[in-house]
Image (cartoon, rainbow, N blue to C red; front, side, top):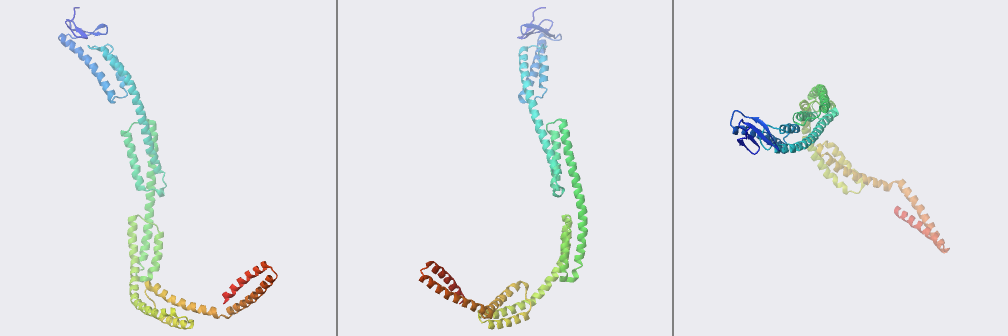
Length: 410
């Protein structure tokens, strides 16, 4: 074999277009390129080197950017086999050194990726667990306390969240996913069954309430010919209405409008009667106010007999006038009652002052006090004469008390 007529730093080509590479301290044949020039033969095997370097560079970039998968170690291992004795011309040892470093980085990268994926799986598991727990909470609500519209929307949102987690979120272990889905499906099915049961019962109740209230409306409308005399019966029907319960809002509002209209007929009749009465009662009111003008000067009379005669005449006139409008009743009755109370007090005071029994009791007590006071005066004199200051002081204290009693009796 003759010396190569074409060579570069890492390889050479002989006259048969056989290409040899310098690999460390040795040379080895990497191949032959018979259908071409020596330059083309060398270029072909240099491109093989460039291809290997490109693969190494690509894996390096994938690790640097974090875009590599968990199979990065396998890719590096495959590349490590390719660079052992490649059919290529170039600095093969530099490729092997880069692949060796790449193996270390790939192992670290794969470990980190596994840890991150494990953490993401744990988060995904916790997220789906939270979805299930919330669904179970909604399903466990007492049926008479559930806000069905809001709870239904929330349950559907939870279902959407579950689907999104399945499609877009990190995958969790199949056993865990199946167990959680079973719990979620059970809670959702239980909620849907309770909702159907609730609204079915509500529909039945609505029908009963509607039927009962339609009966009450018929009864209320039948009272129209009675006018205001039908109001007591209408109020009794109103109590029955309240006890009948509620139908759906729309139906109940329509029924109430009909029932109220029946009542308005009666109350309008009453209002017309009151309006007619008030025309008459207004005249009575003016008359009674005039009587009060005569009555209120009695408040200055102190003779009970004169006051009684005057108030009696006033009361006779008052009763003859008749009724007044209701809104004025408290005012004028109160003014008359003030005058009557004044007369009654004059009579009571006179009776207390002239009652024989009261006088007799007063005079008897007065005599007893006067006799006791006289005795106490003598007792004080005797104690002072005997030099008994203590006894004199006790008698003096009793004397002061009894004198105050006597003074109170007048």
